[in-house]
Image 1 (tube, helix red, strand yellow):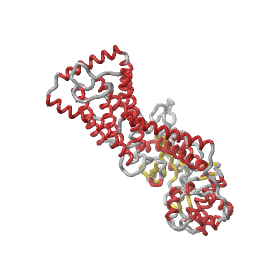
Image 2 (cartoon, helix red, strand yellow):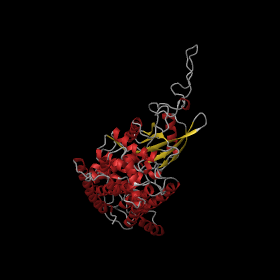
Image 3 (cartoon, one colour):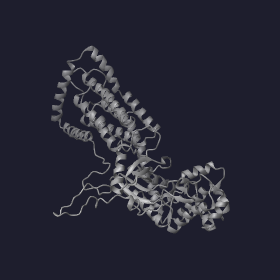
Image 4 (cartoon, one colour):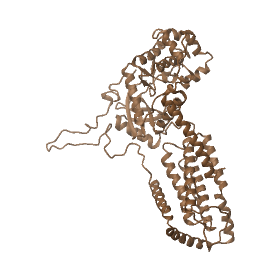
Amino acid sequence: MTQHAAPGRPGGAADRRESPALAGVAAPTADRSIARVAPVGRRRRPSGEAPPLPRPVRHSTRVFLAVIAATAALEAALFARPILRVVTIGDDAVLRALVALRNEPTTQVLLAVTGLGSVWVARALAWATIAVLLAVRRFRHLLTYLVIWLAVSFVAAWLSVALGRMRPTGIVILGDWEGWAHPSRPVTNLALALVGILYTLVPHGRWRNLAKWVAVAVLGLVCAARLYLGVDHPSDIAVAVVLGWLLPIVVYRLVTPEEVFPVTYRRGTTAHLDVTGPRGQAIVQALDHQLGLDIVAVEPFGLAGSAGSTPLRLRTSSRGGTSRLLFGKLYAVTHLRSDRWYKLARTVLYGRLEDEKPFSTVRRLVMYEDHMLRLLRDTGLPTPAPYGLVEITPEREYLIVMEFCDGAREIGGAPLDDHELDDALRIVRRLWDAGVAHRDIKPSNLLVRDGSVLLIDVAFASVRATPWRQAVDLANMMLTLALCSEPERVYRHALRLFTAEDIAEAFAASRSITIPSQLRTRLRADRRDLVAEFRRLAPPRPPVPIQLWGLRRVAATAAVLGILALAIVVATAYVQVAGLV
């Protein structure tokens, strides 16, 4: 292991920049003045200064919110009949002016245009959007899309019935219509469908900007046609546009922001954040100011083996012109939510297997991994040296930095000698002695470098873990080693550090659900039944039960079943109110 001069402060004194507190401070002159220059390197962010990657609300979003608030106030005022009468007088004046412009060719064209606002067009667009989102597995966008459509449909239906506004009177209405007039349901549904396509299916940038102009043109033509034909009042159209266009845009921007949930069709996982553009610049700035690191390259690394963070390889430079590599893991709110859902699902399915509480904030998640790195290092375990963590966006994005195990290879890439077998098994022995369980021992988390075995990815480690959980670590380690060796050989080496009863307990507690997915996949590919062979070698031991029911598991299961029942009711109401079938 590479040892550093001061954990959390990368490099030795010669490799660190001068502290900002001392940088540029000259000796007092005769007039007792002090010359200062701008600090370089590590510095404290002054109060009120924006974080490296701020999350400001866009100006247009603020404008939309103001328009939505004004519309809500107007809608409340319309329930007073005198105000509704005044608004109707103004609407009728506009409609009469449009009626005066009618001619046969224009009427025929706009009658055809109103077909774009039919319920069948909205249904086709809505179901097509849902099908694509399911196909590309963009479930957060899908859930947001469904909730928005259901909520807006409910509001529009309630307003139309509660206000009970009739269709325009005193003019000839051309075309088909049904129901109450306010707000315009066809315009609302078409706007919902178009905005849903823009913000869930069209990638951000040039394509979305072009699609916005097309959508605005289509929606504008339909609105103009309905006014020309006298089907809707102007205020009906205006409220429908606010409900179906402006309100969904605000929700999409706040719930599925592009910088966190980008619309992309590239291969990958939503757990991996884009580290180019503003986020990449923010990472470089944060590492410079908070850890004093001069970063020259930030690139994704090992994405295939990580679903709970965005792993990065960081290249630094020093005064001597040499560079070195560091490893970083970028955590965001998306990873925190994934961790919560993961632990809830495992608690419901397996009970005791994952009976623990989720992290409350991203900062606590990152702090825990940094703490475990330092704890395992202090116990003598061969884990990467910690360098500290940096704040990208307060309470939303953090980056933890550690040693990059340069020159190491994943275990299993080549046969292991006796020293490497003992080194790997000694890791579990030290974990036991420290009262810690790693909980994710698999080939990708065990590296070999210069004949020594390294343990990485300690984010799931648990302090004072249950005995069966520690036993599972031993079983997974022996299974990982047996993939590139023989079970009898691994068993003999394990007896040097553990008793036969310890090994028997480990495989009595081992089940398919206790084995990490990567290790489970490789065991299936191996023609040998390694679990059965280890159980044959070890003394007989009854299976250790793990699917135990407790109060917490019962409560979590009941809550999940209740939510599923509610979802069925909501889905039924959604189909009826939104009119998608």
